[in-house]
Structure formats: C-alpha cells, structure tokens
Amino acid sequence: MTTSTASVTLPGTSVARFPLSALLLLSLGVFVTVTAESLPAGLMPEMARDLGVDPLRIGLLVSVWAIVVIATSIPLTRATRRIDRRVVVAVSLAVFAVANVATAFAPTYEFAFATRAVAAVAHGVFWAIVIVYASSLLSGAQLGRGLALVTGGGTAATVVGLPAATALAQLTSWRVAFAAMGIGMLLLAAVVIRRLPRSVVVPVAAEEREPLRQDRSLPPLLAFGIAGLLIGLAQFLSFVYIRPYLAESAGIADGWASALLFVYGASGLIGVAVAGTLADRFPRTALTATLLVFVGAFAALALLPHVTPVAVGALALWGAGTGAMFPLIQTALMRAASDRLRDLASASIVVLFNVGIAGGSWVGGQLTAAYGPTANMAVSAVVVFVAAGLTAFAAVLAGRRSATAVSAPPASASAPV
Image (cartoon, rainbow, N blue to C red; front, side):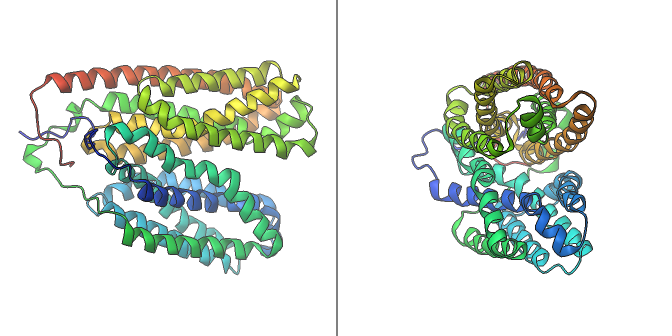
C-alpha cells in the first residue's frame, strides 16, 4: 500500500547544484511582500494627512492584514494545493501587485482599506506556499541553508526595504512608494513564471491513503505550531513597545533609538546568515538553542535596563535570534512533516504566528499601561522559555517518528496527497 505518512520527501543528498538563482528569486518575493506589508507603518503620517483620517486608522491597515491572513491562508492553501506551485507563487505576486497599485490610487480611506485586504489574501497564500516550493527544490542536506536564504528576504525588508520605501515616499509621495512596489512585484511575477521550475503535487488515490489520525507527524507539528504562536506572542509583546522601553526603562535618548533599531536589524541579518548552517548541522537542537538565546536577551533587558552596554548587547542578541528563528522553525517543520501535511504545516505556522502577533500587540499594551514596558520583556522571557521546551519536545517526537520510518518496510512516499 502507498503511504503518505513518511517524512517529507526531499531529494537525496547527492544533488550537485544548489539552486541559487531560483532561491534568490523567491527571497526577492519575500523581500517585496514583507516591505509592502509594513508600508503603512512607515508612511503613517503621510497617508493619514492625504486620506484625511486619524493616524490610528492607518494603523488599522496593518491590523486588518494579520486578520485576513489568519482567516484565509489555510483554506486558500488547501484550495490551490493541486496547482503548480510556481503558478501559485506568480499569481499571488501578481494579485499583490495589482492591489498595491490600486492602493496608490485610492481616493478614500475605505478604498485603501479594501485594497489592503486583497493584498493580505495574496500575501497569506504566498507565504504559505513559498517555503514548501523552496523545499521541493532542495536536497535534505541543503534545506536549512536554502530556507535561510529565502526567509532572509523578510529580514532584509525590515533593514533595507521599509527604510528605502519610506525615504522614497518622503522625497515624492506615499502613493509613489506603493506604485513602485506594485510594479516591482508584477515584473517579479513574470520572471517567476518564466524562469522557475514546475512543482506539482501528484495525488495519491483515496483508497491508498492512510487515515490522517495515523499520521505520526501530527504530534511534533502540533508542538512546533504552538511554539510558533508563543514566539509571535513574545516577539510582538515586546517589539511593538520597544520605543517606550528604550525611553522609559533604559533611559536612552530618542536620537539614539533609530541607531539601536539598526543594530537590531543588522544583527537579524547575521542571524539569518548563520541559521542555515545551524539548521543543517544541528537539525534537532538549533531551534531550541536559538530560543534560549532569546530568553537570555529578554531576561537581560528585564533585569538590567539601565545598564546601557547590557541593553545594547541584549538588543543585538534579540535581533540575531529573530533573524535565525523563522528559517529554523520552517526547516524543522519541513523535516518533521509528512508529505500530505507539508502545505498545511507551512500555512498553519503563518496563521499561528499572526495570531501571536495580534495577541502580543494587545497584551503588550495592557502590560505597558499597568506595569511599564520593562514588564513586557520579563513576560516575553517566560513565554519564549515555554516555547523552547515545546520545540525540544517536538524534536524528540520527530526523531522517534523518523526512526520508526527507517525501521519500517520501504514504502512509496514520493507522491504527496
């Protein structure tokens, strides 16, 4: 009987060529989509003034993004799972592009709100499928390095993309920034459809599938998923309120805040650079060890906020951990998931992380109002410590499942459901 509960089917380690050009294109897609996602935050004063609304209503354009991604990512990923992944990536980029250009020409706030919702739908599908697609191009030995390259586009968007788009808007108009992002995405979609290889899921006949409840990858995926939610919660519980922390808790002047945030972002790029090597050399422990670095950084920020060298060093460690964390958790998911659950696992981690973002932003506001921003760092340390325990537990479960699969009689698992 053909089974679909074996671990993710990746090409053998004998694959000679690292698909650098294809991964760079996917990383560029991540870069432009994450930059576009964050644009309202960087252009809040200009957009509010032009559209005639309170700046807080522009902030809702970021909030609605997370809500739409949570609501649509999983069902749309399931609906498109039989389509060539290259086509799904290209079409989602094209829809994203059209929505951004439409935002650039928005006559009213309500119109801009609607176009952002459409862009969020495309973003959710893109993020759910891009990791699975990249994994299909990589051998098992290349997985960590390849996914770090792809997801590194998101970190680069924070460090380079958003500041550049903000500068363009200040020199011209916020509408020019949105239009430029849209045109760039449309060109990228055309290149993706012409240059990237096909990746089609071949279905297994219904009578040959094992019941989903017998899929041994479900327990580790569930543990990784809850850990992802907690990481998003802890990250945004503190990061959204980093400016109040620097001013009130650390006593750092506003003029230095942008420099420290640059340190955070640059450290994130370093984290991305080392994540691939860590994921491939230490596949079962790299993620947990990185989260323990998070715990140490948050604890230092909570306990010694007025010791400036400690605060700066902890902020750099936090940034490095942030850069490394997402490629590491995506690599862990792709290694743990069975063929039939790869798409669902990738979509689910995006959804759960966004749930954590939404919850963390709200909880962080309550903590800051009641106890001050230092409390946010302390709570984040505890939450990430729990997440680290979950990832260690998930790695043990995934290792046992892999050992069971190796000892079992060979089965054909090359055709995902």
